[in-house]
Image (tube, rainbow, N blue to C red; front, side, top):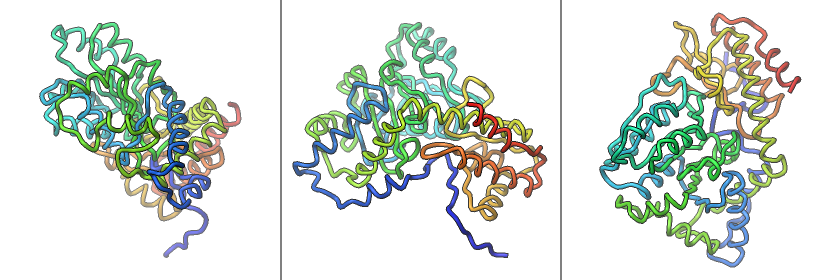
Length: 389
């Protein structure tokens, strides 16, 4: 029987996240002259707001791109062919970043993992301490791995690098953590932070953000990989005047200004606490169902998504298809080696308690309909967490 879909679609991916009506309406404004006099006051408001979100006093660059473009910008501005980079295979997005680095001729030293944890600060310390020649030019890690729900402890990674007295740059993919999890570019002494628009910042895909420390900008003066579109100094110089070196995504910038206003109204600390509540509540539901999360360490759970492992013999993609057809809800697929084994529940961005309850109700009913052996009561367990925090 063909079902007529009523109500709204539950887009419960870990990104793109739901775009609030306020942001959608803001993007519908008429486009203005990006070389005209009204543009600099508009963009400076955005740049100031982004500095608060990234917790930095450095310029925040905005490129019309996805997060992958941000990775490329980080690589080509700071490194040269043959440079040695330490990277961790913590999930599919880490794998993709490793691939970008290799395509530019970098010597990538990859630390494999079981995709159930973040990058290990102790391994960072061991590798850098043993590198007496300081051959590593950078350590590149994913803060919140969107394919697994496991987060790297960035402050601990920086402490490990400092303890090793190593000059390597610290590069962090914060695409799914900025504006939803605690993140401090300056205090954690990150050299390059990469962000994107479609997750905690509640926008459609299309904008990549880069924050570069003074050390990273100095490294850019010595780096020899070719760059034109991604050139930081051109971007920073024009941004200082309120403009861009080429045509910006003006209507996405309208939406970004509105999203930043929403974050200010709620308070960034409150936004982070809200996401942490949803993470704890969702994990309580998963435990009650008798299932496992992909992230294995309690101190490394990310708060923007929960990756749920189905028992052997059950197809996660078949389950997702059933949930979509029956409940008009999209859940995240398993990526790479997790394909067919894992589904991902997004709880990020413009989201509230009842939206989470509805999401978990759809998941719990879908599990039962799919014949997955689970114990009922996950929604109630999640609501108890929300009611008591």
